Amino acid sequence: MSDNQFKYSNSVIVIPLVFVLSLWFVFWLEIRFDFDFDENGILPRTFSGLQGILFSPFIHSDVSHLYHNSIPLLVLLAALRYFYRQQTVVVIGYGILFSGFITWVIGRENYHIGASGLIYVLVSFIFFKGIQTQYYRLVALSLTIILVYGGMIWYAFPKVDDTISWEGHLAGLITGFVLSLLYKTAEYKKVAKYDWEQPDYNPLEDKFMQRFDENGNFVNIPVLEENEICDFEEMN
Image 1 (tube, helix red, strand yellow):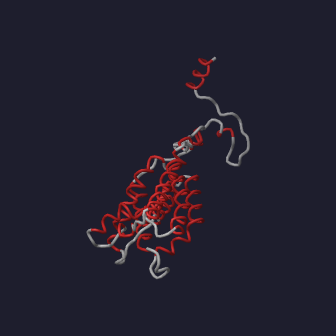
Image 2 (spheres, helix red, strand yellow):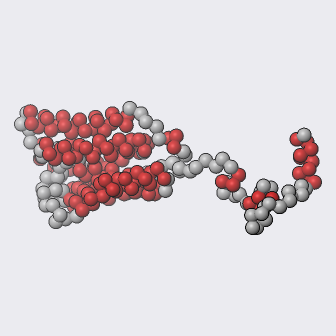
Image 3 (spheres, rainbow, N blue to C red):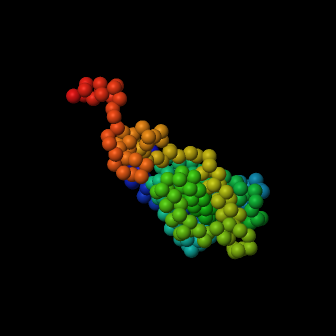
């Protein structure tokens, strides 16, 4: 498949905007009506805490927490939709479910909230999938992702910052990597236009190449075989 599959559509902008606006709407509801949605987050290894697998990405502690998650989500969701159109829904959906469940299993006994787990899913998926395709545009995207967001890796380890859910970050990295292995993308190959670009090309059988010796010097035109002479006469 060629670059033609990378086509811009309104969904590249709409999907990230709708998703991020939904986060801000939930936060507005919490402020406006004095709700406390923290208890709807992930509470590890408790039955009631399972609800947080679905709800936690939409719950944030304050404006700063929400703001710092919104910008990466806008960028990463747009990149996901543009470069991995067919995988967008499954990466977002299963990314939330699987990273949330892993957090529920390994997390500390505290409420885990925020969309940072999904951010780590997106970073991990886009990076590893680009490397796996070995396609120059997607590899370049992977390198860009690691340059911009590579520093986030430290927040997937304990003791770096006790105020964040490093378990959710680690769960996101694991989930993104697994999804990059499970969901295949099209093979990105350059379309062969010339004979020498074909995989079975043999220069010894090329009539043009036979006009040159092993040192690259021009030699006499090879003698046409009888059947080739007949073909040539028929063409004329």
